Length: 495
Ligand SMILES: Cc1cc2nc3c(=O)[nH]c(=O)nc-3n(C[C@H](O)[C@H](O)[C@H](O)COP(=O)(O)OP(=O)(O)OC[C@H]3O[C@@H](n4cnc5c(N)ncnc54)[C@H](O)[C@@H]3O)c2cc1C
Image 1 (cartoon, rainbow, N blue to C red):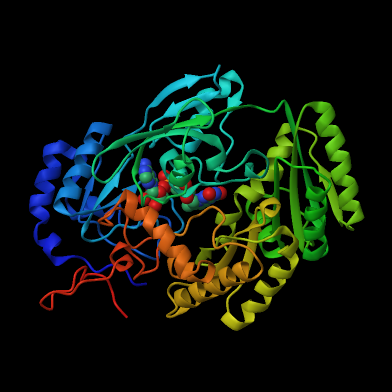
Image 2: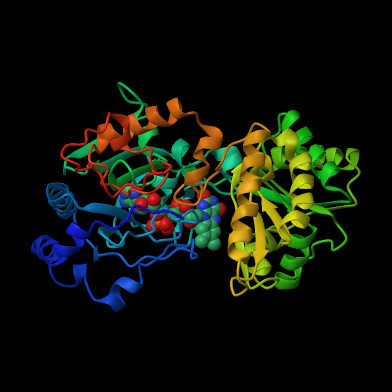
C-alpha cells in the first residue's frame, strides 16, 4: 500500500519539533523513545505498522490548540488517535508525523438527565457512558462490539455503529454537540444540548470525518431510557436465502427489532464451540432477533416474528425466557470474531453495506469467490442494516496470503458497490478502502469532498494518506506550477 513518503526535511528537524512539543506538554506527555512509540505503531488493522515520529498525549484543550498551532506553523502532519481500535487503519501513524493520542481526555463532564444528554471528553470509552448513567435507568445506544475499549472521539470520527443501531441509529444520530480544534488551533463548537442548529449541518460533516478535519475535544451525546424489557429469538434456517427473505419480511412488516444479526454456518459452529450458547449446528444461517419495549409490545412482536420465521421455513426457533437466556443467545454473536480466530491463524474483517434484498445473492457470490482466492470466509453481520462483515481467513506466515486476502476483500467491496451498496458500513475508509473510493465516487465527487477537506485543512496536514486515493489531494486540485524544476508537493507519489 502506497503511503505519502516521509518528508526528509521534517525528519531532519525532529529534535526541534519534539522540543516545541515539550514546551506545550510537559514530562511523560511527549513520548520520544522507540520503545514508547512502538506501542502506537498500528491500530487494529495490524497488517500495517509505522513508527510515529513522536507521540504526544495532551490533557487539556488548550494544549491541543497549541500543538495544532505549532504543527501548522512548522508544516508538520498530525495523526489523531483515540484507543487505536480502528479496523481500517484510520489511526495508522506516519513516520514524519506527530501522533496526537487523546487517551488522557477521560472525564465525564456533565450528566444532564433532564435534557437526556451527557457531555464527555473524547477519550472516554463508549461503554463508560452507559456505565455512568445506567443507575438512573439510561444508556447510550450505539454499541460497537469494541465498546469496552473504543473511545467516543473515535466513534465520532468513524461514525461507528453496532447491534442496536438498526433501531436507535448510528453515532451521527446520537451525537448532538461537539467541540473540536482545527489544524490552525481554532476552537469550534457545533450543536450542544439542543437539537438542530442554525446554518449548514457541520456536525453531520464532522461525524465520520476520520480525523481529517479537526481534533474532537468534547462530545455531547443523547442518552435513552433503558427499554423496560427485551427478548431474543434464535432462528435457524436450512438456507441463507430463507434467512435473508425472513429479514426482509420482518422489516417489510414495519417491525424494527432492537437488533437483527445473522451468522452463516462456519461462524455459527465456531461461536458454538467457543461459548456453548446452544446454537443449532445444522443451520446454514442463524438469525438472532431482539425485540424490546414494554411487556405487551414485546409479547406481540415476538409472536409476529415467530410467525414470519415459520412462514420462511425456519428449522428451529427458540425464544429467550429470562435475561440470562437472552444474554446467552447474544454471547455467541459477541464472541464470534475471537471464535473465528480459533479456526485460522489470521482473519481479515471486511465491512461493506448492501441493500437488504441482495443479502442472499451477495453471500452466495462471496461463497463462489472462495474458490478463486483459495481462502475461506465466515460471515457475521448486521443483517437488519445490510452491513456485512465477511471474515476472510488466512495465514500471514504463508507468503502471499495476506495480499490474497486483501484482493478477496477488494472483490467483496466492489461487489457491494455493484449491487447498489457502499464501501463501508461502520469501520470507515482509512487506508484500507482508500484506493477503492474510485469504485464508488466519480472524480468530480472526490474533488468536491477534497474541497471540503481543504476548507478545514488547506495544507493537508491532518491525517494525510487516509480516505482519499493518492494523487487526489489539495495539491492536485489547482494547477501545479513547476518553477525552476522544483516540483511542489514533491512527496506526493506520481504515476
Ligand atoms: C474487536 C473489534 C470490534 C469492533 N466492532 C465494531 C463495531 O461493532 N462497530 C463499529 O462501528 N466499529 C467496530 N470496531 C472498530 C472500532 O472500534 C471503531 O471504529 C471505533 O470507533 C474506533 O475508536 P478508537 O477510539 O479506537 O479510534 P482510533 O482507532 O484511535 O481512531 C479511529 C479514527 O478516528 C480518528 N480519531 C480518533 N480520535 C479522534 C479525535 N478525538 N478527534 C478526531 N479524530 C479522532 C483517528 O484519526 C482515526 O481516523 C471494532 C474494532 C475491533 C478491534
